[in-house]
Length: 432
Image (cartoon, rainbow, N blue to C red; front, side, top):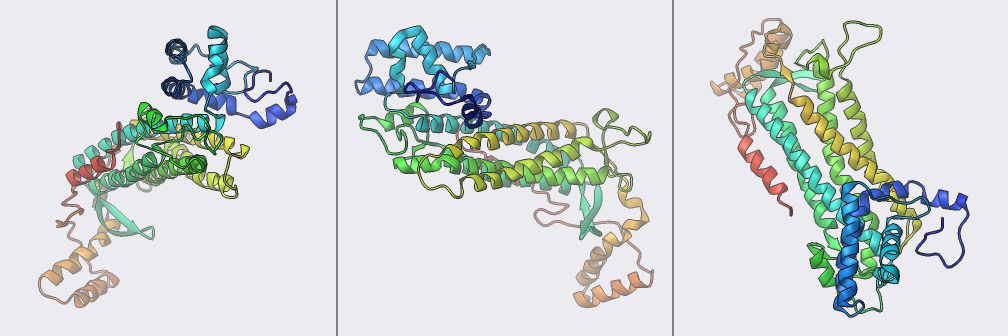
């Protein structure tokens, strides 16, 4: 590979290059726009401290804007003999502007350059995750209100337990997403700190103005200690993995519910034929393949945090090439969570719920607690009421009154939809 920023006249063998670069050149394409944005802020700061002239700044800025336009138009190419995105941007500037293009690396290392690229990229990704999660949250809340009067069985230990409702079911997953959003906001705040200027992890003898680049790049704060900035590599990715892992857990459990509720033994929910798949041998089958694949993909997203922990957990401070593999782990997981959030919302637009579920006699015992409470409210001690209903059940004399009167906060009759919405709005209030 000829075009490397570190080359001093020698080159690694192809086998070494292929092993050490891996998928990095492919994954770097996701960082291209952010590499240019970071470079524009960096050169503006270099001009302010006298390392570039005003004329050089104008020409370099115009050159970077041209590259940014090519990236956004989809015509930007990472050439086969170019090591990474940083090398490609600098190479293009040098071709077009001469030796002036080589000046953009002053005061930087690829270590802090990739750090700022990744942090800018992850901020953008988390904003997209927020928007996609909010869309699904809104759909779940609408379904919760639409079907709040339709009762379904609630289960503990996989056994019929107490009355629930579609309002509770949909609303539960909406609120779970609100809890997940606090993790997303926490991850955003953890990465919203500028590492640029930390160079290879020990600072720089140039009189860099890191406050200026922090403001230009819109970071909320700075990684002040240059060693701490280097240590944030891995921690930032881990925070994002934990956040999307929380959403993945919510989607995973919802998908598992859907698989169960679609089963003919339950028949609680259904979807149009166009959203299900069939069997190659059994003509009656309507398989929940979307929800099964979602369940599996969400398991992969949840595994991401542990894989990051295993990668960075035994590294001393300072840069190590192992850290390059973080992109290999996290970037595909981000693609998966975007895909799953969009698909869940897409499927729920067409969900059909069954409204006569509790007419079946097998659900009579759902209402034993309701009867115990009725007798207790009428004056019977709770333990006596419990025992008397239990005897009726054992003797086959229990008669279910299939009505509920739940009024406390968060119950069947008081879903607190607006309060849950306010919780989500609070969680999602991190910067645009």
